[in-house]
Length: 187
Image (cartoon, rainbow, N blue to C red; front, side, top):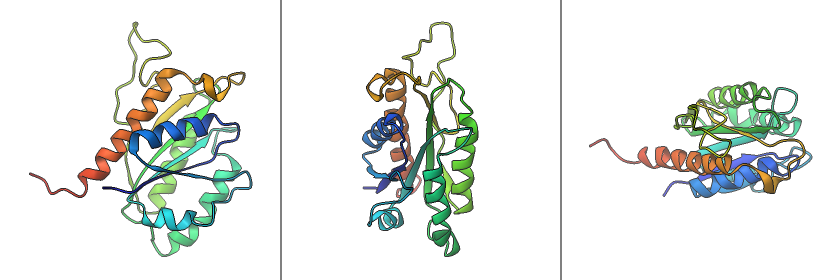
């Protein structure tokens, strides 16, 4: 059994709902960064024990939230001793617009994982990019490097598109599958 932690910040509840779907798919524990950019008391220990860390942040102004950035900066203590080297990492983001510069946020998460010596797990799903695709299709937003989801500014967290939630679950399952395969020797 692999230990997976989804560490995330959510400003308005949308990213939290996506984080929960990812965690459901991965059978992972949720670790929320609070409104002041801090982890709960046992947060760093949970991350140290994890086989895989899935990071999530809303995209605000073309990047991660300041609360997530505070967490990332605090992880420099772990970086200094290479405490997360060779762990699996993956990432996701949510913003109001279909693009919303989500790619910049995902690149930031990948870079953070790379600085820690981590191994990145991509989304692992083809996009829904044919004429039959609809907003509720799997991977409609079309991510490859990680999970991209969209929540209009006037939508509540309960109104997140069914396809985004299903993509989040599938993403979590994919990360869990990759994490589990690390413990098996090739046949």
